[in-house]
Image (cartoon, rainbow, N blue to C red; front, side, top):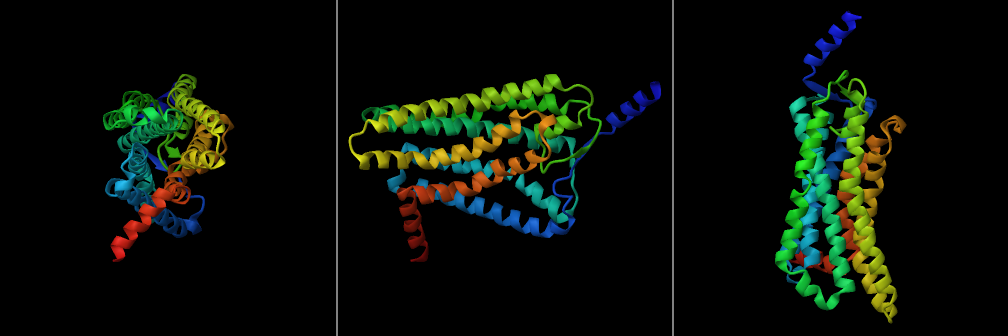
Length: 314
């Protein structure tokens, strides 16, 4: 009985890195996947970068709505940059090792930026609520100082809790080091931990509810009030315009929460590799489509893009 315990203790002392398996089960597609993810990453940087530029330089977009959109695009760039460069490096070099410290840093940034996104999406919903339900008070309520405070609050609110969450997960005793994922995330890390992780899982679900579901319910509450207000508008054209200002945000919310909720609220014993695909969805696909969604669904953004393009080509 003592010998296995000694072996386990020895294994724990040398656990200084993880192996990100990623797409190692597709050896013939490594080059193809590298090219696909490189294109996706470049499109995220360029698309969201353009939104940041036009929301800063175009005079017609100097409103709270586009101030939040510019900050959201910056967040999407940061959020994706936490995971994609490492994925590209692993695919190119085939060296999938990541140190415990690097894993902890990646996890802390990933969780913190994820929480920032949930709060910023809620702030954007609040902005639409005030604009549609309280239009006369909109300039007073959503002044520049308030907008800055809401953005700063979104960025810093989740930092203490997510740093603590990261510490709790990384400090667990691990029996294995092969992480069946494309980056360091909580659910796959818990699968490698020794012994009973019920307490840690409960902590993860509590954090998911507090920092994920609560903002989501707030967003739903705002949109219920928005829809009720819109349906009371006398003109059909007025309703269409009001809905169009919210549709882009609703699509982004659906993409982000749809995959994120499934990943974090399904027990790890019930998941069979689907979290790997879903995590790619809300960390890569949503940021990639964010500029496209706002360009197609928002005439002001489309016009600003065309104006910027004309200036560049002129």
